[in-house]
Length: 234
Image (cartoon, rainbow, N blue to C red; front, side):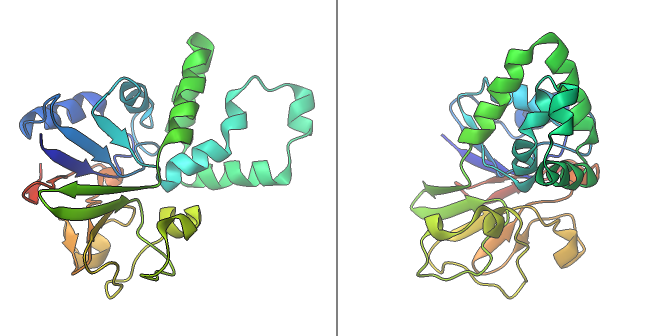
C-alpha cells in the first residue's frame, strides 16, 4: 500500500482528477489524503468531488478553511422562509459574505441544484465535512508526518495539537523561517507555493512542506507519495 497526499483542489474537475490518479498508479489498495479545500472557485465548486468522496473508502479529506466557511453557512442550504431571512443574525450574514468573497459562488450554485433534486445529499455532505479531521498523524516506512491545511500559528513544540484553534491551523500561512517539529515532517497547503519560491512546485523547509501548487488558479494539483517522497506534476 502506498500513501499519497494532495491539497487545495478548489473545484478541479473530477474526471480529470481521476485521470491523474490513474497516471500516478493509485489503486484501491493505496490511500490518499486531501489536505483541505476541495471546494470553491472553479467549475462546479468541487461539489461533484464531495459527492465522490462520500463513496471512497481509501480517500480522506482533511478540513480546509473553505470547508469551514461552508459549514459556517450550512443554514443557507435549507429551505429559507421570509421569516427566517428576517431573523438572520449579523454573524450569519458576515459568514456568508466572507465565504462569497473567497470564491463560494460556483459551490453554492451547484449545491442549490442538489437541494432541488436530492436534498438528502446536502445533509450527507455536511455530515461528512463535520466529521472531517483537522490534523492527521501518519507514519510511513518509519517516517512520521503531520498533515494539516495551513500549518500552526503560534507554534510551540510543547503545545498539544488539540490545543490549537481551528483558525490557527486552517488559516495560517507560515513564514519561510517558521519551524515546526524536528522529528515529524508537517505537510500543508493553503498558501500557493509560488508565493514562496515563484515556482509551481512543492516548497520544502527543514520541518514542513507546502504542496499547494495552484489548482485554485487553474493548474493541476500535485501528488506527493510519502513512501519515497516522490513528487508528481502534470
